[in-house]
View 1 (cartoon, rainbow, N blue to C red):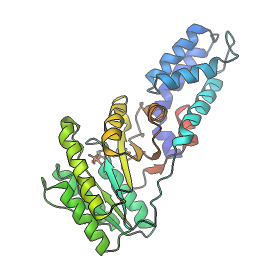
View 2: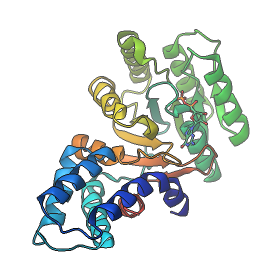
View 3: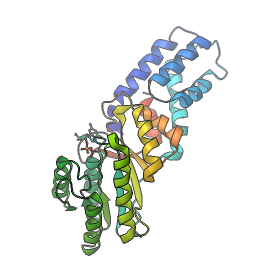
View 4: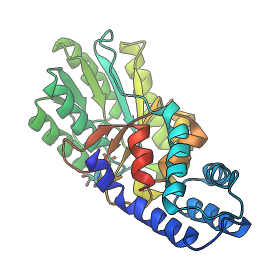
Length: 299
Ligand code: GDP
């Protein structure tokens, strides 16, 4: 929680400073409320959320003075109400062996890192893991996954750069069965520049996985980089429609002023939010808590 608060400090500061400037020495009239709405939209919370918060703040307080802390409290409670229903812990189903997780998202969003962090966490719980280096487009991604494998003691299945991602996924599941893995995590490429190719590749991976394990993938996690702000909404749109996303991971909440985007996404898509990344280290992945997040964002 401390990590999250310090991580979200930039998001919170720009919002709370604006609120203090806005309501100090000023009545809560229509103009003030309108400016508050703008402020919330600029904080990436989304128009629907902004309207909802402004309604809550304005209710019964028109033309009255309001303390900045009261506004922050109202923001926190509205945000918590939006996030509460979508905050879901990510718990692999032990009845599925191996439990197959497909990681999707654009390049640089943090897929490989998130796989590494989850691997570290699950290895410390004594689980057996197989990681599939399915981002065969970039040699660095393959290397990075191998490093996480060596660091955590997870088995890594990799081929050379340019190899067929579905082939890697196939081998990973076959090897995971042979070595008794509890969980398989499949990394994928994220070239949004060429959507058709990307989606064809994802579909092929899913097809191959299903052939071996008809109920798999058991989870399709979309990894989103909080620093891209409004672009994240577009990414949810594309991946949710084509990749069967079951839940979200939001990375890089540390040091961004755009953490509010998570609220806009929750309000618009209602997809489960499982985890948040607050740094590059193995321990910098946390279960998503609606309460902690809403308190952190409202300062
Ligand atoms: P991928 O292309 O989706 O696999 O993305 P990577 O896992 O390679 O991550 C891209 C960059 O973002 C790397 O430098 C990571 O260390 C960094 N990164 C990933 N998650 C976080 C996070 O939560 N916070 C910060 N600050 N950096 C992160």
